[in-house]
Length: 157
Image (cartoon, rainbow, N blue to C red):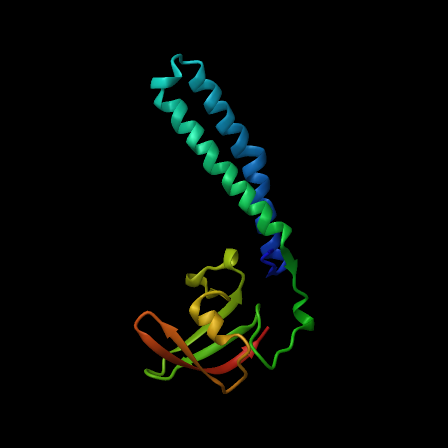
């Protein structure tokens, strides 16, 4: 089963740039570290060799995972999206019903998440709770310490 994710052009370009960095710069660097450590003699007691091999394993896993994400990525034409309800790539302003605090988020794919800069994953509890809501709707969202209610006060692109 594939997990299709939707990205902006800039978001997908960032993923592809990261893959190029890992494959063309990090992979050769780690390979060279392994070769250098191998030249130092007995591999059974060579901590540098084992650390470099472990780093290589982590790097290859990250590359494979990133290739999978990119192969299942789709670019959204945001101009074609319905602005009457919250979808991925919607800019939303919500108000906490309990304390009146307002928050603004852009709903994005998991790999683009950056809460400090207002980019919230559509797979987070709040993101999932907001999907499909319309202006004026109240989303009841299960969070670790109970249910929070957020009123949708603005939707844009």
